[in-house]
Image 1 (cartoon, helix red, strand yellow):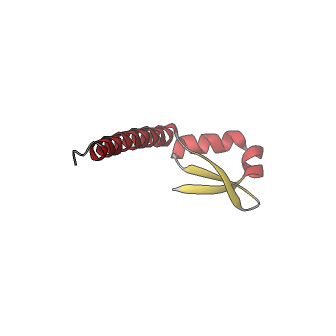
Image 2: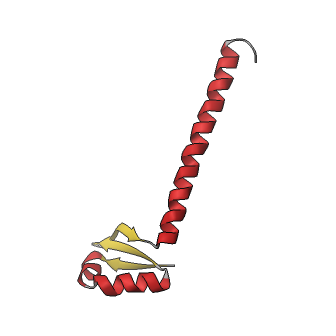
Length: 79
């Protein structure tokens, strides 16, 4: 679940919103003129996002390496 919040309101009441986020685990989507500009998430959510990013990079590197092996095999006439 997330709560949309104007950045001016968040800035004016920073501590209560941080306490709310910590207690509830809700994600806060910060807006400016009604447009989302950022988000505040729990450390649990942040760590999960970081893990996804790490796994994505590893997957892309492995896929690239596999394709390079296939390319070299094709070039050498082995496939």
